[in-house]
Image (cartoon, rainbow, N blue to C red; front, side, top):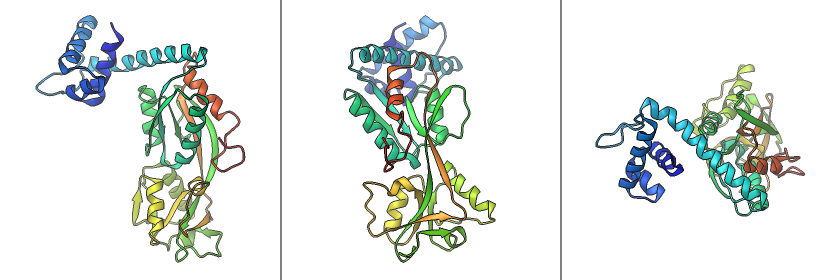
Length: 302
């Protein structure tokens, strides 16, 4: 069994198409198909349902896919460990981020890459906590920032910080002399909120429901940047994490008010697979967050 065979198999499963998988692996479709056939022969089971087009994986293929991803991850960890031992970690990092933690992700990844300049990062944004956890378990991501609302023995979850949700809007919507707004006043504003399936939105809705207040936004988005863009039109009040209005944020005349009665706080954590021995890449993230569990803009933040 060759690692290249596993790479081709994983690529087919990911791309759901032989041609696209071959292009991603920089080989011809015939070479990729032949490598997977040899892998099937060696394992003694069919892995891919074939027809005129890709028709999915067999049950055996679904099982083999998990192990293939794990074996490739172990091979990457070995290479990274050897490189780190020579002070030249050159890892390929796949990092997932929930919308509420984009600012923290930027700060964290900047720290990791500055300390390990040969690393290359692919950042996947606007994912839910559940999607990030699922991709970690499938070895499709190496780490991610999540809301620590999951309890899974497979994961190592490192709490980073808590931050409040704030209201952002034009002076016509949020008066200049108001530093905070109670929930009952918020309901009368033209609201733009994160989508209902997102954890930050769920925490917001739950807190308001406890006060028998129902939020009815006219616009919902899966992106904090999208909410800020709506607020900049002057027609909307957007609820976003405080860090979204931190250093580097251009207010464009917008006002920021703290939500009170209820006050809503979200938690952010770094999630990785809880595997031993710890990989060099995992150690790089551990070192980057050590002693820096604060949102961007706070003293001592990463």
